[in-house]
Image (cartoon, rainbow, N blue to C red; front, side, top):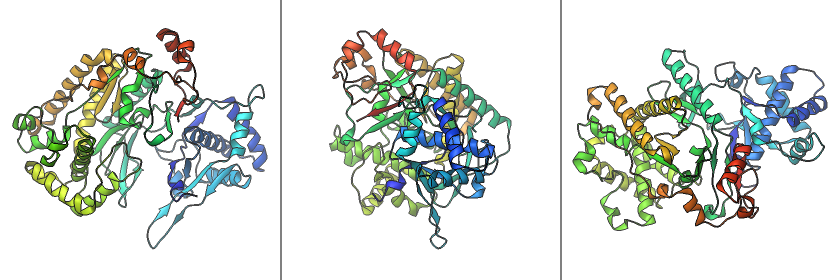
Length: 508
């Protein structure tokens, strides 16, 4: 077994639910088979667990579900409204393991090193075959991914505290007018996203290094997450499959069966802009409208090369770590972990710890006016600012019944609404900056210029690409004659409309 196989997992979602007749039949069958006690709460937990095991399998057959066995993990709080606790979960998992329906690895906690590993499980073929055989007509059919979903009462405003160096856990909080208002926006936003057709066009795309690409387009729910036990730190919008795909694929997103590409807009160097303002300097007025805060002199001769992009990614990541961390000594190790992360979407230069230390010194010299904010932890407070702006932008589009996708401090929208997005982003930013007081008054509302990739009309772009397979609910490596099946864009849109993008895209 590969050393890192068990590191490929996600936590069990206790707010998973389903109305799939197949899964309900399997629930009844397994309940009679693996239990002698007739506990109703065990039956409910059984449906939740087999549904999430199956959804995890659809997302990636090699992925595990992490499951907590500690009693304290299932206390009834705002984060656990599923209605069952420790005993039902443990009994269901143990019974599924005993009857060979799951592969299971027990977790541990080392009191000496304080290192812990969560228990993990995944469905065995025996369970998958059982689920897919319980159809109305007796044929073998998978359960549609969209029939496994999250319950609407799941908490959307999350407050976390740090435990150790990396772990952060949700904590309870008192409800206020602010948290209620934030939740109301999230509820309306998620309702809008759920009613919106959102898909991705992968024709002609070749995954890097031949890796398999899986995108769960049923995952649309968005939450806000705050840090450090305070609603003044963080608060960005998380969730939504569009946040977790490679950046170069965002321009392939399809919204509302549009025959055009999307536009992505983001705030131009917003955190550096805000920090320079706090230091009394208008960054772009001082250094030029085209100034790039993530470049250093040694990169000049690399302009236009992949190596230039790698270094720029590195310095952008470096700034983020420097303003988020409070311990200066931690930064080189954290940076090395970040840039050597095999799951990272960005590419970085190959650097040693000594290289990183020298790069940090050069970056500090480059941004001497804001050096005092490094290692101050101010980054999360800046995230709170951009999250307030993002919330205002989202509220505007909710009121106009237009779908917009939020990616932290950027927004994706149908390119027919480009000017509207530009106007709203700039007005919301100015509005929020004005409300923050005099110390922020000189911050200018600047957005990143339009990317050439986004200017290409969808029909022109797709015409230049090989015609492989449609990206509805079949595997994209199965070649079909696209032209014969879809003679026009109208027919293609109708097929998308019927499928509602409620599937997991697999590209090999």
